[in-house]
Image 1 (cartoon, one colour):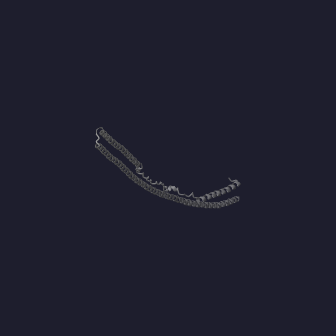
Image 2: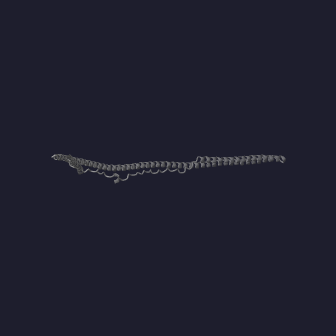
Image 3: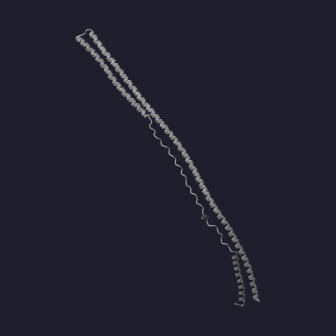
Length: 300
C-alpha cells in the first residue's frame, strides 16, 4: 500500500501546482491589462502632443507671416517718409535756385542798364567837352580875325598919316616898310597864336577821347557777367523697398508621422504562458513521484 502514499503525495503536489498556475495566469493577465492601459495612455499623450506640435508649427508660421507683413508695412512707411522728405527738400532747393536765378538775372539787367547809361553819359560828356573846345577854337579864330583886321586897319591909318605928312622918296619908302613890318609881325603873332591854339585844341580833343575810353573801360569792368543758367537741383530717387520672403506653406510631411501605439500584450497569451508553465510543473510532479516510487521498489 506504499504506492498509494506516493500517489496521494503526487496528487497533492499536482493540486498545488494547479492552484499556483491559476494564480500565475491571473497575475499575468492583470500585468498584460496594466501594460495595455499604459500603452493607451502613452498613445493618447503622444497623439495630443503631435496635434499640439502641429498647432504650434502653424501658429509659428502665421506669426512669422504677420511679422513679415508688419516689417513690409514699416518698410513702406519709412520709404514714404523718406520720399516725402526728399521731395520737400527738392522743392525747397528748387525754390532757392529759382530765386537765385531770378535775382542774378535782375542784377545782370540792372548792370546792363547802368553800363549803357554810363557809356551814354561818357559819350555825351565827351561830345560836350569837344564842342566846348571847338567853340573856344572858333572864338579864338574870330578874335584873330578881328585882330588881323585891326592890324590891317592900323596899317592903313599909319600909311595914310605918313602920306598926309607929305613924306616922299626914301623917307616915305622907309615909313611904308616900317608899317608893313609891323603889320607882318602882328599877322605872324596872330597866326602863331592860331597854330598854338589849334595844336592845343587837338591835344585836348585827344585827351577827351582817352578820358571817354577810360570811363567806358571802367564802366565795362564794373559790368556784371551774364549769370547763365544755374544748375537744377538733383531730382531725388525713389527710396528702394526691401523684398521680403514669406515662409512656405506647411505641408503634411512637416508634421511627421502620426504616433502609433506600442505592441499590446495579450492577456490570454500571458495566461496561456502561465498555464503552460503550471502544466509542465504538474506533469513533472507526477512523473517525479512515479519515478521515485519505482526506483524505491526496483521498477524500471
